[in-house]
Image (cartoon, rainbow, N blue to C red; front, side):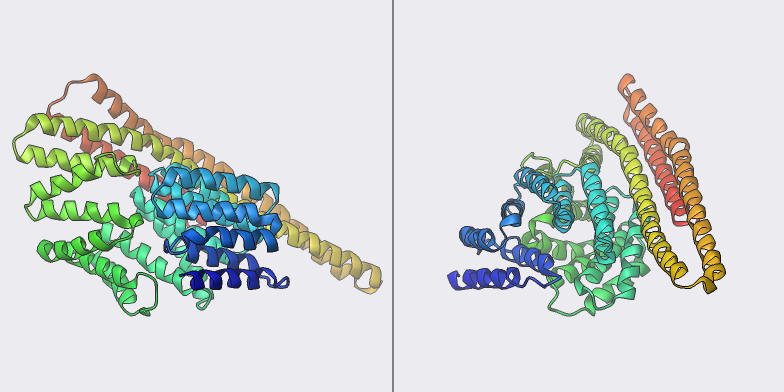
Length: 469
């Protein structure tokens, strides 16, 4: 083990001493993630790599050493500690004006916040990561963040928005097929997940074939294939066979996917008429020993427990779990409008970033035009016409940007918030009234319909911003 660690330290040194390596920071981050996030083997040698960083990259050593500690804490599922360490690293990176490290750290912070079940904070962090990618003017980094954002929308069941960001990332991969094979692999995984949850069997089969035809060297490819095979069985309602595969995933899956597989197993047990097995898993998920407290997940757990209790004629337990489910639904409803606002802000950031890039291009063109005028009076007329056209284009882009901004503000305030008001009104009625099971079910139906309409409104916002509306 020591030899492997010394090799890692030597590799880190060789990266840091190459002063003309344009990908130096990327190589450093990749090495550190492989050394400390994928396995605990190198934890005891953390100080050795820290010494190498202190010696060969003094300016960024504190940021990177804090980053290493955060990777270890996250792997250990100590998400709050990882979260706090990443905030510390971000503060240091901002002081040192290290844009690339800020991009990496905001992504890692969002991962930890997702692990903790805080979709709003995760989306905000991804917004910051996307801004850093814009400053770096790097399409690949933008594509990675788009992939990550799709995870947030998939978790909160905003599948249309998730597919928008996945399509953006896939468009980059189509232009640069050899840039990062793991990126397109993860796009396949996320799209398959979305299509499974939408019960679109044909689309799921398409991406299952993609996964099955990928190279065996891809990390966790075997687990991915097992999970997609289970999804196919679930859509075919072959629950006994699906249970066998999902139990294998629950036993072997890494921590970040464990809860999702447990939920799938509980739901499959219930559909296979094994309510007691489903109940045990759900009670374990709600036992309080997990750090993911996302209301959208808690809502599903309590709702299924209520259904199990109702089928067992335990109406007191069913009523209790239904009320707990509705409390989580109310929290989820409050989160939805903030997620909608953040989604709008991310899109505005993209428009502004594009506008700023065009603005810089315009400035460069202006300098060239001035030089051309100084060199030759003969082409003054031609240059003047080109300058005028460029200026008009810039003015048009400013007007278009302002128009998009106003349109978005109008749609956000009149469409998205209308549905949220409906949901909050229902929640208020639920708090004031003593309702029986049938009335609770009716209110639950209305709440879900309002949430679906909010999803449609957000989809309209996406279409307007992308120019499809």
